[in-house]
Image (cartoon, rainbow, N blue to C red; front, side, top):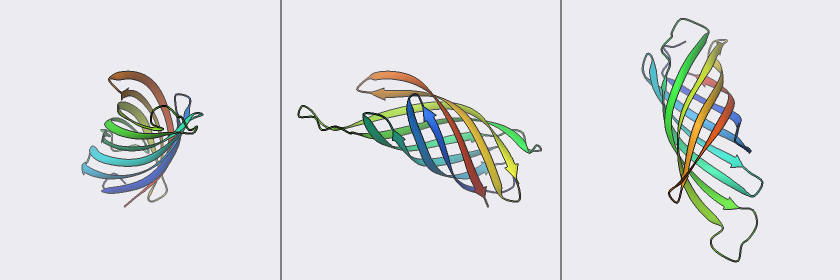
Length: 142
């Protein structure tokens, strides 16, 4: 199953006090490393966001059904406040970088269940905030 090159999937999770959902597509460049792109939605009490990201995935162990991995990536978020404010803009933008670790469980012929923990550093207007993110997802590879 690690000889497959492409992967598409979805995940749900929690980033701090926010809920997330995302779709992703990946391509394995080497037998132990690949690139992933993702598009997601972030749901908060006071605002909602859209996220775009790219990451490098390292999956060094090839022979187990459970394979650990680490990831490093960048993401960009566009936010919109749920309440209309008469002062300032109702939209804003932030950037983030993340480092993650997780496990893939290969099931069936072409399917993967994935659990991941990320440490995310969000930056907006030169102010940085750190958050933890948990994700659970499902992928198919080809």
